[in-house]
Amino acid sequence: MGAEGQMRSRLERAAEGYDSLIIAGDANVAYFTGCYCPGSALVYSSGSATLLVPALEYYKAAELAAGWMDVRPVLRRSTESVDLPGLVRATIPEAAAGLVRGRAAADLGALGRGLAEELAARIPGLADVARRVLDMRSIKGPEEVDAIGEALGITERAMERALSAAREGASDFELAAEFEAEARRRGAERFAFDTLVGVGPNSANPHAIPRGIRISRGDYVVLDGGTVRRGYCSDMTRTLATGDDRLLRAVEAAVEAALDAIRPGVPAREVDAAARRELERWGLSGNFLHGLGHGVGVEVHEPPYLAPGEERALEPGMVVTVEPGAYVRGVGGARIEEMVLVTPGGGRLLNSLRRILRG
Image (cartoon, rainbow, N blue to C red; front, side, top):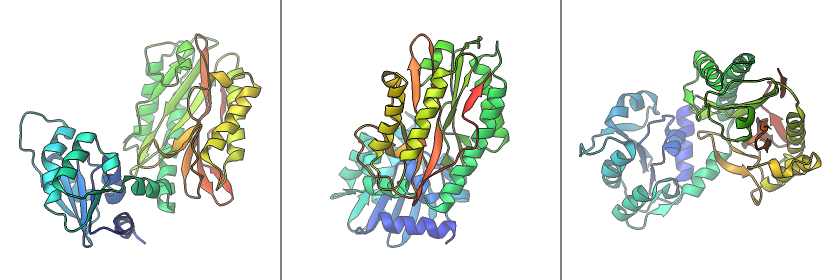
C-alpha cells in the first residue's frame, strides 16, 4: 500500500462508527495527511477529505498532502492577532462545521480547551476520538519505523560531531551549535525539541539549556537532541565523562536492565521499575528524577509512557525511549537515552552510537 492509501486507511479506521471526522490537533493532522501545517484541520466525510489550512500554509500543504485530498486556504477575519492558535479559533471551527454531515467526531482531547469548546458548540453531539487516534499512532508500521530510523541516524551523526568538540574550554553553546549545524547538513527538516546541553553542575538538571558554561576537567557533559525526518521524530542522549564516570556506568547498567525487560505484554511500569532497581543497587534510586521513557512518532513525546503506575502493556510496533538518569545536585548528572522498537520477540535497539563516552 502506498503512502496515499495508508493515509486513507488511517482515516477510515479513525472515523469508524461516524459519518464525519474532524482532526484539528497539529500532530494528528500531520499523521493523517503527511503535512505538518500548524493551525490546520482535516475534515473527512463520506470518503472525501478536505484539508483546511491557514492561507500562509497553503502552498506547502498543496504540495505535501495526499493527492486525493482537497486543500483549501482559510483567511483569518481579524487583524487583531497573527498567532496561529488565534487564527484557528477564529476561522477553522466555522469552516469545518460547514463540511460535516451526520454523526461527527473529532480529536477534542488533543486540542486546547477554547478550540475544543468552539467545535463542540458548532456541532451538536460531537464525539471525542482523541484516545482512538493516540492508540493508532502508538503502533508504528514499517514505513514509520524507517522514517524514525532516518531521523535517528541524522541525530547520531550530529551528536557524534558535537561531542567531538567537547574539549576543555568549549562552551555548551558551541556544542548545541555543532549538533544543530551538522543535523541540518544531514537533512533534518526541523528539530524535535530545543537541544539540551548540560555542563558541570548544570548537567544535574534533566532539562539543562545552554547557558554559556565552559567545560572543565572532571565535568559531566550531557547532550540531548532530536531531529525530524519525513515527519517523524528521534530523541537520544549521550553523556561525556571528563573525569570520574561512576554515574555514567550506573546509568548504562540501568539501560541494560530496562532493555532486558522490554517485551510484548509487559506493563510499561515494569520496564521503568527494572531501571530503578538497578540504580538502587548503585545507591542512586533517589537521583532518578523522571520517568524512564516515552513513545516517539510524529511527536517526540506520545504514548506509551514508561513510568511508575503506567499499566498499559507494550505491543509490537511501539517505538519507545529508554532514558534513565542519575542527577546529583551541585555535582552533575548523567543520562543515556536509547530508542527501541518493540518486536514480537522483545525489543530491537535502534541506536548504534556507543553509550560510554570519556574525554
